[in-house]
Amino acid sequence: MNKVRVRFAPSPTGPLHIGGVRTALYDYLFAKKLGGDFVLRIEDTDTTRYVEGAEEYILEALEWCGLIPDESPKHGGPYGPYRQSERREIYDKYTAEILKTDYAYIAFDTPEELDAVRTEYESRGEVFAYDYFTRTRLKNSLSLSAEKVKELLDQNTPYVVRFKMPVDRILQLEDLIRGHSAVNTNTLDDKVLVKNDGMPTYHFANIIDDHEMKISHVIRGEEWLPSLGLHMLLYEAMQWEAPKFAHLSLILKPEGKGKLSKRDGDKFGFPVFPMNFTDTQTGSVSKGYREEGYFPEAFINFLALLGWSPADDKEILSMEDLVNEFDLNKVHKAGARFSKEKAEWFNHQYLQIKSELEILTYLKALPQVIESALPDGKLLKIIGLMRERATFVKDIYHDGQFFFEKPKEYQEKAVKKAWTETSAALLTELNQNLDAIEFEAETLREALKSYVEIKEVGMGKLMMPLRLALVGELKGPDVPDIMEILGKEQTRARIEHACRAL
Ligand code: GLU
Image (tube, rainbow, N blue to C red):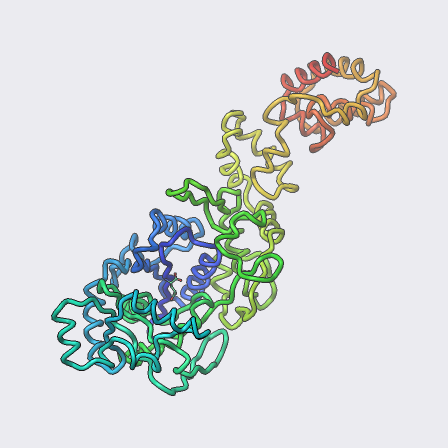
């Protein structure tokens, strides 16, 4: 068997949507499982839809996800260039070749002429298609005489190359996920293969490149399934062996109906892009998973299971596990409903299994944490105490903000509940005793216990106002743990301040 080579072929028409990332992921997993290559090809023949920065975005997003291409415009490779706009010579050669076959012809109809025909059809309540039926009455090398064609070419009349769809053939199509289907060629139109500027359209460039780049499997979005018939015929026309095809079902909106589209942006309260994307034209920023605080591993794990399930229904899978377990036969035919809760669940899980040191790196990237200048030792303790209830690293900061700065105010409700007329005296005396105590959680726990015993008050009588003094409200981990991290000086200052303020 030839080497497995799978390509991801996005068009740089904007930021990569999470559906595109999932396609790239399945391409990657399939290739790597079979010891093959993962190729990134930029399909930029449609210059009118080109968006600046999109190619860089695609590469950076793939890298963030850990989907590093073996070959790409950035990484090079034996079948380059990997940008279609740089492959013109290759396409020219095959344009000439296909025109020698009976599968293509040239057409001179101007856009205005085609619009007029379209309008005429519409006025009769019909839909116009440039196909086996209408082509004989339009302006092309099939309908015009050889002399007329020559004359038009001599006058440099602009033309396009169209595919000549065979008449009355039933195509038998195979898809590795969807199985077998059949399509009658009479229902397919004569697609433009080469535009009047000589550049190929998606269909033609795509099959040329898949052939030239020795692609063995095409795994792509369901939206390309209607093009499969044409693509198979193009391989037939060129007398090339076609790759195997697999079309992935869509990612659906959370309610389960309709495709989750780029335009859905932040509508549902979660990003549809892997990373933030700034539209240079409008300046508007679309949110990304990376900036929202997702770990790439969690994002990838979540995406992998959005449309595929491993044999044993295991949920937490590293990239290595995914590669080992991936199986196209287990990719779902039905669309996968997006769930924000599930995405967050994955991030929470990864936050629990990651090493404290790795979490520390993320935590230390937050501006507020940098500003606080807390030493690593304290940050690690904070992580240990706070990670269990956090979904994102930033939650560790937000839920534990009192570690980083003293309370700006005391929550009214908490004051009512916790602060009594004896609190100030109880805490002031405690504060004096604390001077001689080593600030280590266990020692503090014991000290507080004996203090309430001596004072003959219930634990809550001390702990609640103490917590209020340190945190500003009645939340957070155990008080002695908080005290240890705050340290003697900070703890005593906060107690003193509360006694004065309340
Ligand atoms: N350029 C196409 C896209 O952006 C590629 C489709 C394919 O994989 O064949 O979706």
